[in-house]
Image 1 (tube, rainbow, N blue to C red):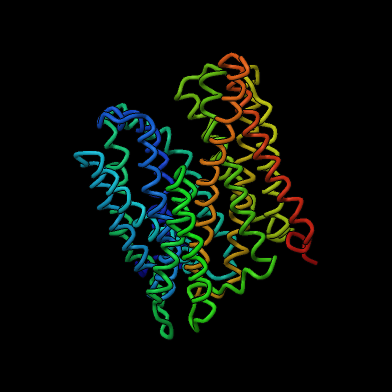
Image 2: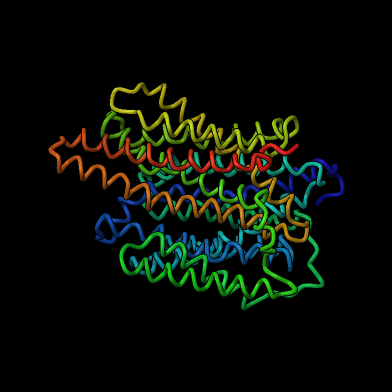
Length: 459
């Protein structure tokens, strides 16, 4: 940092660098717009494109918790910088992929790089400011992340049309590399001196996380096999961690409802929120007759709302506390999905847009306040683990919704078609059933959490 810079200006500059580097993660939503072009380029069936998503998410979920621990031990700036370099190499490899297998391998590398970035980024951002600014910094991080999600689909479509599918990867190269080159302006965080990196525990944790995601994502016997692997490695991990004097994460935290319930709630919030992105585009294009570009802009209202919810979180936490604010965000998101279950071809676009934005506000409000709760529960020396946990619960909710939501929709649609319903009526039957079931399930979970009201409304 320059000596002429004021402390506040230097902090703002450092935070901007961290946010710029972090945005390469949510901008991966641009890849969705490239799916048809990737299919055409490699001569793939439509179903094959799912591996572009699975390879990335499995690698990310396997490494994100471990990367947080690495940040705690060896410094958040160092791990964040390593993630930016790995991501830069992955973007280049994806864009230059000569065949589909190469692309999938590069997506695995990208998942590792983004795990290193996001495992360290929130903790690095928090290290720039005093503890009294914690909620405000988390709100800025949440707003930047939501902004990347909102920008991704529209940017991706424009890039693919102008330069081809490779551009959704090449376009992020300058952002990742530029943030890495400027990282010297971000204050370094001290390394832990008394702890060591637990290789065995990290391997078990990574195996459990990756197996869990594959168990959820894959059908049939493959999914069952990975599910069993996830159960066995998790049990081994728990036994080992309980005996360790320096565990990866203090499992005793999950024995209290005050900590475990908000983490389960985070999975449910992202599970509920993703159903809109999963099935909403089909409703907008098939039933409302919107173009893909307009449908994408309509979906972007959710992340835009999340930006507003992130900003709102600062004031609500100051006035009411993090737990009541998180509960309010969870309810707002649930209400939006419940209302969305009633939409059909006659629903006004203004109504849809309003509820999409409100649901996004709920997600943004919840994510900031939930992150605040998790980070407050762990010591400052465990901020990387805390940051990683908030990213892992988000990913778990999205993957679970992609599988469960699709199954609910296809089951109800197939039944309606078998009963003689027309294509449009069968689609709406499946759509309403999927949305309604997700809303009912999450609503029941929220009611059950109120059996321990102090989780959300402490005295």
